[in-house]
Length: 326
Ligand code: SAM
Ligand code: DTB
Ligand code: SF4
Figure 1 (tube, helix red, strand yellow):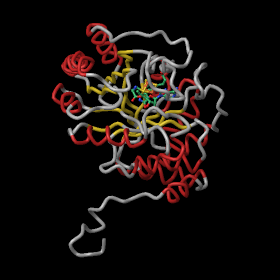
Figure 2 (spheres, protein in one colour):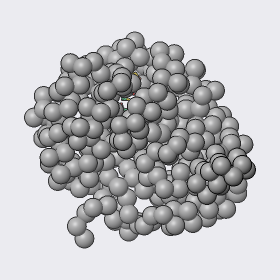
Figure 3 (tube, rainbow, N blue to C red):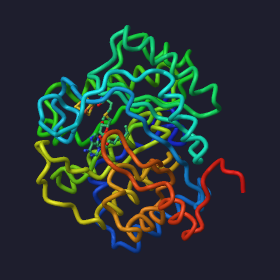
Figure 4 (cartoon, rainbow, N blue to C red):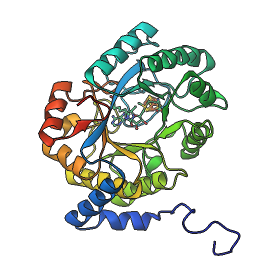
């Protein structure tokens, strides 16, 4: 890359090696937090958080075998299957999310990927949610050629598709689609000029090296994703991961801090698992550079803190909701 005809160091994106990311994880906690906060303050207002509300528009009965997921048909988790919601139910939920202060509405479907007959009604939902003045996000599984463009043309702002974990650990968690399938969908999303929302789950029994492997993969996406959800596994009875040894919450805080350092301009979302976290740990996550949360009492099928509890927490910390009148 030193050849004069090649891009210079300033326009070549930095490639993160797993060992470099792991070295960040290994820093003394205070040093890691200092670096993360310094980075956070370089690119963002540290006292502002973005609020996204989720809605499951199609629930359960999924053909895939993701070991963490309550919606996989093959696991007996008690989740009730629900076909695609009527558009009015979706719009009611979107209006309520907006009234509560969310700026983005994310529609999730338990599909391996959408068939065209599934996608058509979702395009209407995207159009009408967007018309309410909300940012729109969808997570519908793997996309085929042309589908990302249809979503973009309907007014979709973000597409969420997670890498979930490191390539080395991936096969322990999911066998019905491979890592490359995920990268291919992300390419299609990026190719359609949609904003990319891509993150993963920790606390699935992966090693620290594998956590670093996930973060390195995310950091090496070019361009980096605009939004990076970091989920703490929600252990759901009936899933293969239900009895996974709990991860130290401070290791979760470290994961957020490392993500903030290497994905310096991305929104890092403190995602699933907040209901099981103390306020103190959540506050440390904000200090570590998390600047987005899922907001609203439900994620897709599992619980999330009540809106009033989140408002209290943000008030206590002096954190403003992005886009809120103040
Ligand atoms: N079915 C689509 C797919 O998998 O691409 C979209 C919805 S899927 C439920 C979206 C993401 O939710 C998954 O990629 C995973 O990262 C996250 N997720 C699912 N179950 C979870 C759990 N129990 N704990 C934490 N995150 C979870
Ligand atoms: C993401 O990274 N986390 C969200 C969203 N993207 C779609 C989903 C979390 C799901 C948690 C389990 C559930 O509620 O079913
Ligand atoms: Fe299906 Fe998505 Fe759950 Fe995997 S994560 S089982 S693809 S709903």
